[in-house]
Image 1 (cartoon, protein in one colour):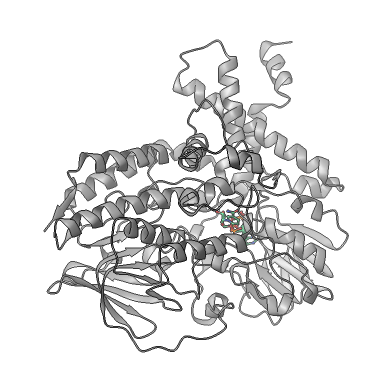
Image 2 (tube, rainbow, N blue to C red):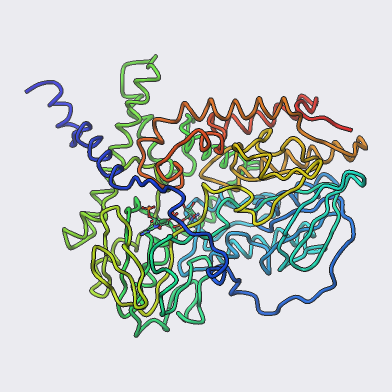
Length: 602
Ligand code: NDP
């Protein structure tokens, strides 16, 4: 027996065969239209984004007054910006939010089962400042929304908030050196500084499929759950569905959480799958009181940093979170430590990384086999791609739902559904008649920033951000754009991407608050990125993205890799490729230097 054969036997799989299988599965899913396959939720589809949670429509006079800082978005980004500004002594803040409360993504995503699958002790920001300890390792959506409100109360962010207010335009008034903010409430508010934190997953998307506008039954998107139709609440008990044939399109992180509730309630549930998610164990548990008592000051930042390092492929002595997110790196480190090669080359590390990934995904596939009773269904539920090509999911009830007699997996072999008819969905050439279609089809990611915001920003000489970014995003640190003074953006574009998004928002918020404070204390009316600093940053983003190109190009299509079509533009419209640890350190060093380099102040 050859040494190679022996090695494969020991692994329990053949890496070459798996690599080839991944390629075949990816190729099935590649499509020419990429992001164009989805329709924008506007015009005849705009009812999909109407707010189903508002009880009383706000009636108020339009506002034309002036504040120091206007913050657009009442999710964690906006809240953290508000908190960090308050801590820096900025009193005159206005929050603007299109929903009817704080909470951001957790305001909108109230579907049954909504919960966070990043550990709550690292996901929720400001835990030491608020003294809040989440009740469980993985906290529910309703608790996260309540916590958002607690933050807003503690830092008096309710004092000057405009809910149900959607920004329509930001325009720089050069003479006054102020931003004019126009909204759907008729406002023309003025602000010295504007911070936009619109959320990277805020625009629901629908498949651009033949017949989507012809369906006669009931329909909604998961981010606007229609409890009036389904009955029940975020804990399930969807009694309105007991005599209904329900179809859900999509099997991403959202569907994984709501399908168990749909399966338990609907007369028949049809789950239309294009690509299976990777479903790992969740292992939720109540918070250990003894552990809480043992926590030392700064535990929260240390835990967030520890998680962030591990999920970005870094090394730490200890894995504090110790869950499915960090396991792959734990395995890799074990593998590397077990080798007698102290100075392993980058290439060798990448090979080991791939092996650790194969092992992890093999265990995910074995889990499917162990849980699913019908072998054919099990085969369809096995994901064949590397773990971080798509967002990994963690759930203990999703897979068992497919053992229920009333639940049917309609796998489409990577093609997606064929079309929608007045009566239901056609997939694999078969029409499924349905009383209700739920779109679990996710959110726009690869489309233009201003389209996802829902408004354009007009900077110096009336130039719009969409014009300035016509050939791709142009920022300095992802936070400023040249020609758009006193304006900041928070998000993932040209900043750090990390699985724990609020961590990144917190670092961005600290940075922005520092800059605003420097301007206010130094009495500088205007702060703006220089064109050179912006160009240098864009070049950095592109060159780092090229280093990650192969990994993404080999991945199954999805929003992580521009639907399988990494392009020059998508390499520019991406995150900082050296990772969040380096990015946060860079911002911190920049502040410590105190030179405001790359910015001009007037
Ligand atoms: P996703 O974009 O992850 O999933 C959309 C789903 O729709 C995919 O399964 C996709 O298939 C499918 N789809 C799209 N078009 C078609 C079609 N024509 N026919 C059949 N299927 C189709 O959206 P989600 O709302 O599930 O999740 C979005 C993000 O929200 C997550 O990635 C995560 O970041 C976040 N989230 C976080 C949670 C948390 O715990 N913190 C919980 C829930 C969501 P395909 O894969 O082939 O494209």
